[in-house]
Length: 60
Image (cartoon, rainbow, N blue to C red; front, top):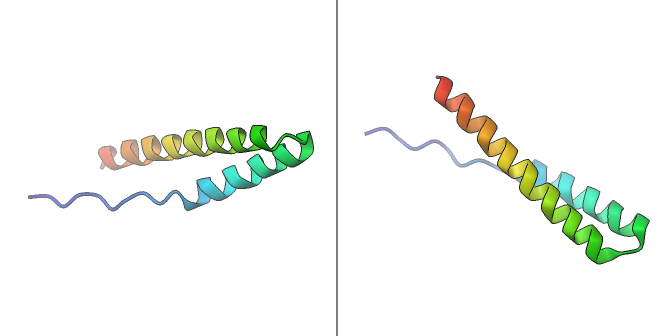
């Protein structure tokens, strides 16, 4: 049996999303907008990284 691949760490994406979301909320004065922006960017970056690493693993 083959061993499963190690889990993907999303720490970097979450830090980027938090910073961008906080900046968007502070600059616009709308904290809800900043939270939504941060969540959307975090999800997008995490999905992109997961797909990238999955394709990279399949090539081996």
